[in-house]
Image (cartoon, rainbow, N blue to C red):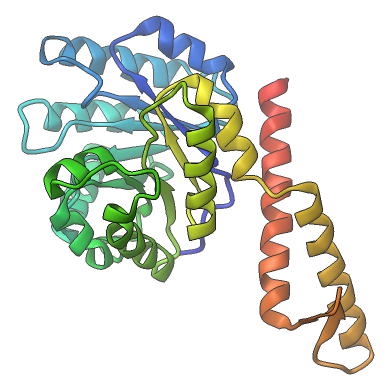
Length: 295
C-alpha cells in the first residue's frame, strides 16, 4: 500500500460526548480529527456519545479534513455497538484502540464487512501497549484495509513505568519500532500527544523531534496546539525550493546522459529525487487542504 497522500500534520482528539466541541471542529485548522468514544468519554456518556458522533459524521460539513472515529475496544461492553454505529456512519477511518495483534485488525475488518462499512472507510490502529509495540510489524501487515498507526504514548509510558522526559528517551525504542513497522508496509504513522498544551516551546521541540524521526504528524489534545504542529510538519519554503532545484538539476543531468547531478555542492542521485518529489507532492497536498479549510 502506498502512503496516503492526505497530510496528517495535526490529528486532534475531540470528545465524542460534547456537541459544541464537535461543531467547533468544523472550523479548526486540523488535518484530521479523532471523534473519540473511548478515553474522552465517561462510562455513563458512552451511549449518548456514540449516537452523537454517528449523527455528526453523517451530517458532515468538515470539508477535506479526515474524520477518524475511535471506538471502544471490541472486548468492552461498548465496543461492538460502537463498531456497528461506525460502519453505518461511514467515517473516513475507524480507529481501534489498544491493537496488539494481527487478529485485532482482522476481527475489525471482518465485522466491518459484515456490517456494511463503506469500502473507502479505512482502519487505523492505536499502538499504546508493550505488546502492541512488540507486535507492530505483524499488525502493520495484517490487512489491506489498514492505513495507519496512532501512537498512544501516555498509556505506553504508564504500562512501561517510564518517565515523561523532554527527550523521550524512555520511549525511543517503542517509537522506533512503530515507525519501522509502518514504513515497511507503507502506513502513515502519527506521533503521540504532548500533554502540557500551554507549553508552546515544549510542544515545538516534541514536534521537531517527531518530524526528524520520520513521523507524519502529531496527535493533539487542544486546538491551541494546531498551529505549531501544522508549521513543524509542513515543508518550509526553503525545503520546497531545494527539492524543486534537485529535481530540475537531475532531469537536466539525465537529458545529458548523466546519472547524477550536483546542487549546492552535494550529489543528487535518483534516491534524492524520489524524496524531493515526495516533498513537493506533500506541499501541494497541504496547500490544497489549507485552501479548502479557509474557504
